[in-house]
Length: 311
Image 1 (cartoon, rainbow, N blue to C red):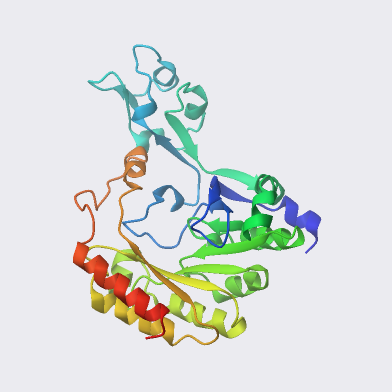
Image 2 (image 1 turned 90 degrees about the vertical axis):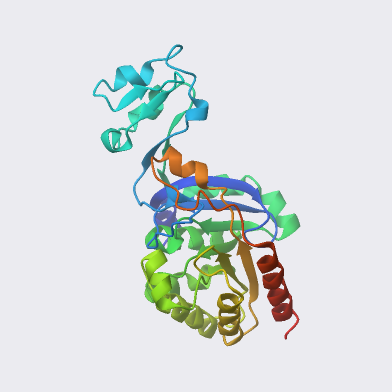
């Protein structure tokens, strides 16, 4: 495929985040892509799950109906009303995909998650920080959502990034056809790969899929490119995989992988994505859970250290 064709390939992006230091080596720019085959209830990026752009409303940014009535005038069908606090209330089902609402809101309380962008447009944004990548060993990280859920866009982005000598990383849940992963594999410099549970039925119940093909894809990646750096990550979720036994089982699987040793990281549960659920008119299932048990966190850290030290 030519560079000209790759540059013109488009996909749906909902955010480009600069100066990240947690999603691959060095200082990185993260390209968040829409769409994911999993539907994890704890997802910190709920705006990434649907493939199509979505309307969202952040009441904190609403300047009040006493000062502005643009959205009320735009929608006179009862889908937008005024609450007791003087701020608007939105019926997301009625509003649907009326993206013009975002254009009439002067306070940016109404926004659209998701925009079709070309590979060239995305990478021009990434290239703005080339000097930071050169000094830190950073680059671009494709995230989401699930990058491989937009296979043509992901491949074109990775391939064109390679042409421009930009280090690449992919943050993936691993739920993708192997043919898609395989086509992208030569252009990926680093993987951040989620393994959420070794219990397939529990995995299916909480995400919509078993973890079987996710594990199989990771094995195939290691067989095809045994030296590619991979950081396996597990989000530790209350009531799902929050036992020492759950984490031990995952670590034993990671130990069994062929090729060079993977890094491993357990990510403690957090609620930082909770406000986005309200913005999308959705219910957050973990609103009443504050954090993991402190003793559990200590035990998991011990398991991480033991793995790191070859025990």
